[in-house]
Image 1 (tube, rainbow, N blue to C red):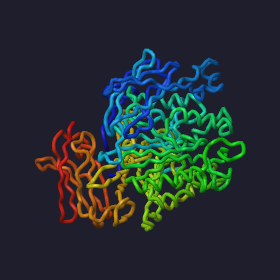
Image 2 (cartoon, rainbow, N blue to C red):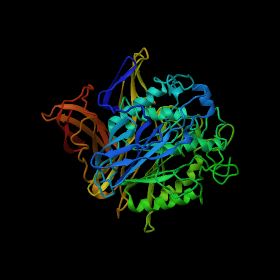
Image 3 (cartoon, one colour):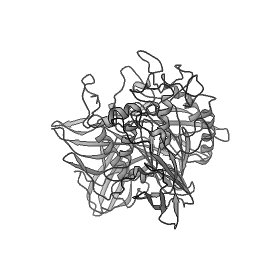
Image 4 (cartoon, rainbow, N blue to C red):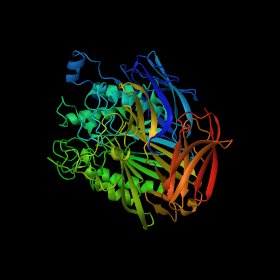
Length: 633
């Protein structure tokens, strides 16, 4: 399945992305267009920014009422003096006003149209309320990290290490801005329920132009406001604490001024901490608990427990409010309570933060100065691994090293009744949003590594044109699906493959998957369970091999899910109703457990299949099972 093509191919003409579909309208009274925050089954926040302190009005399509915005002057978003002098002739626009409306009384898993009027400008959008824990509806989450937006990213290509010739420098095929925009377009096409960002949203948290760039991209994906359709959740990364190279880096109090910009933009759930409110939090979304941590600073300063040798945080002389995450800290104590509750009440627990703890990237070295050390190391975050095992956290989602790498750390989960069972903690570095595309550090080993794109997705070239493989921008897509009273989570490594001709001209791009889909079963309330590699499921489910396809009907991709009671060689075929072979989707030896493959609605030659019913057949030894899926163009 390596390099499998998924979804629609996007075409480019004259350097401009050609995308077909409706656009959202707005006008000049908005500094930042309306966007969605903090979704719950019965409420959601809608934020926007303007130059006016006059409240705006929000109308919900299903209600005959108008809601006035709460307005505060977001003085933390003023342009710093060096930006004002360098780019605005000392006369920048003043700090904007932040508008917030908390819409209450919603029905879970329900679509709502809304209309916002600010001055003479009107914006219209639609959102879907979050599912309740009792709702049996599929959920799609998407995560990435390290978008690191800045105006200077346009036209700037990053180093793209060649696995075959690591010592020879070369640049990536696209500039960073184009790569990020293509990534966002693919995300928009997939219609996720939530978009999570595991830190380093911007290049410099203290530079307002970098934040302007971030919101321009999030609210204008080929004319469509992605952030008004999909709620955003984010963890703070070290770049959010970074003032910028012109403003003394991480020095205090400037670092606190930098993170205050991030805090102004995000309406995060409360964590009950007066000093670190909003910097770490929990969000329950249907069967999933999502926990965001702030691991941007460890204490003591410049010790083996420190993730940032330049930053002074909470409890340190001259420090700001960046919270410690070490044992006994307020964040550590809060995390234990949240994980214990999630273990009892949620099908899955995903924790996301910035500093990936296991990696072969530059931040995989232990903390310190000099060769074989790193001043922004993720290694200290490993101190939380025993807690993650204890409470059965399913996956950690991080960034920081700007590569795609997956690791698995084995441990032991302690169940609420005091018994224990083996536990496999999945760890993802998803730092490929639109900035770096790094290779591994020479001499650095990660014994927990399961998949590294640099090594496991080899490039295939023909006539000077890349055909498949390689390191590309992308994200993690998670589908959480109900199945017979329990849940299944399918974690898919997505990359956006660019079609670049021999002259270096971008002609299009499409969504593809790396060959490393992970399937997790919900066993939180099972009396008996079977741990198989990185996958876990109940024994009774193993006998049912080929599961119903999802979604069905489908119009771009369909998931083919199956389970094996023992290692077997399998063959999956797609045929039309006449029995003609459309495509052999997979033929290979697989381990026992849960498995998933996606079909992108194309035949063996890559042509789009016509609308209609297709037969999906799984052959294992002398057993043949078939399910039907309907493709609707």
